[in-house]
Length: 414
Ligand code: ADP
Image 1 (cartoon, rainbow, N blue to C red):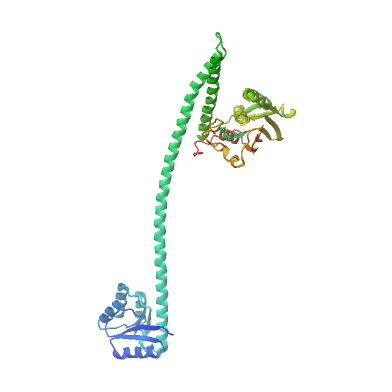
Image 2 (image 1 turned 180 degrees about the horizontal axis):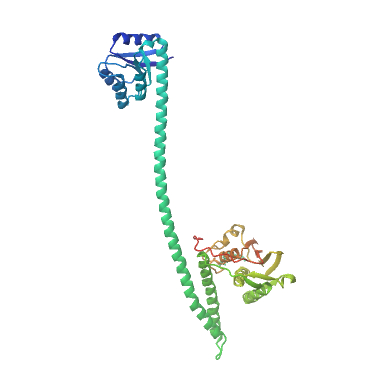
C-alpha cells in the first residue's frame, strides 16, 4: 500500500489553496491535507506537528515566503518546504532555495502531475538529507570518541614512558650497586684466599691434621665464593653493556691446553678424566681474539662439566670448520639436561634444579655470561644433552674476531 503523506498548504488565497488541494487529491497520492491562511498559524502548527511536505505561498499577509523559510530553518523544523511563486519570480525562487527551501513551483504550473512529482522529489531529497545528516552526526560522534580515546592513549603512553624512565634509572642504580658490592667483596676474598694459601704451605710451623683440614675448607669455600662474586660482577658489566673484547693474536691450542691444565685439579678431586683433543693441524693456528674472553668461556663450560659429572670424564675437542670458523666442544658424561630445560639454562639465574636443596652450588649466571661473551666474539653457542648420559656444549666463532664498538647502556636483560 502507498504511504500516506501529511501535507500542509499555507496560502491566504482560498482559491489558490483549493487549486493546490484539488490537484493533490487528483495526483493519485494518498494525502492527509491541512490548510492555513497565514504564516503565524502555520509556524505554531509546524512547531507541534510533523508534516511530510509543506506548500507555502510566497506572499502571505504576515510573512513573505523567504522570511517563513528562514524562521522554519531557525526552528529546525525537519520538513521539506515547497514555495509557490508567481509567474516570472525566478529571482525569488533562487533566494528561497538558498534559504533552505526544498523546491519552488510557479502557481501557474500547478497540476496533479507537477505536484505529485514535486512532493515525491521534495520528500525523497529531504529524507536523503536527513539520513546524510544522521550519518554525519554518527561520524562526528565516532570522531569525537576516537579523539577522546586518542587523548587517553597519549596520556597512558606518556605515563608508561615516564615509568619506563624510572625503571631504567632504578635498574641502573641496582646494577651499579651490585657492581660496587661485588667489586668490594673481591678484595677481602682475595686476602682470605692468600692467607689460607700461606697457611697451607705449613711454613715455618706444620699444622695439625685438623687445622690443615680446616684451612683447606676455608680456601675451597673462599675460592667458590670468589668465583660467584666474579660471576655477579661480570654479569653486572654485561647488563650495563660495558663488556668489551680486545682482540689480539692468540695461540689457540696453547690457550686451550693451559686452561684444561688449570682445571685439572678440580677434575682430579672428583676422580674424573679431563683431556683436550684436536688435530695436529690446529697447533700452528693463530687466532685474532680476546684471550681473556676465550679463557673465561672455556673455564665456565669445563667447570660446569666437572660440577655436573660424577663419573667418567670431560673431553674438550677443537676443530677448524672452514677457513674462517673454529669450533670448540666441551663434552661430559654427567647428569645431562632434560629437553624442557635446554632452552632456559642460558637465561640469567635459571638452573635446571632450582630447589633450595639442590646438590650443586652456583648463581645460575655462568651460561648467561658465557653466551654474552660468545656473542661479543660474534660466535654462537649450542647444547645437546641426554639425561643421565651427558651434555655437549658447542661454541663456534670466527678465527679473526672484529672489535665491535660498545653499545652504551642497554635495557634490562631480566
Ligand atoms: P650454575 O652452574 O651457576 O648453576 P650456569 O648458568 O652455569 O649456572 O648453568 C645453568 C644451569 O645449566 C645449571 O644450574 C645446570 O642445571 C645446567 N647445566 C649447565 N652445564 C651443565 C652440564 N655440563 N651438565 C648438566 N647441566 C648443566
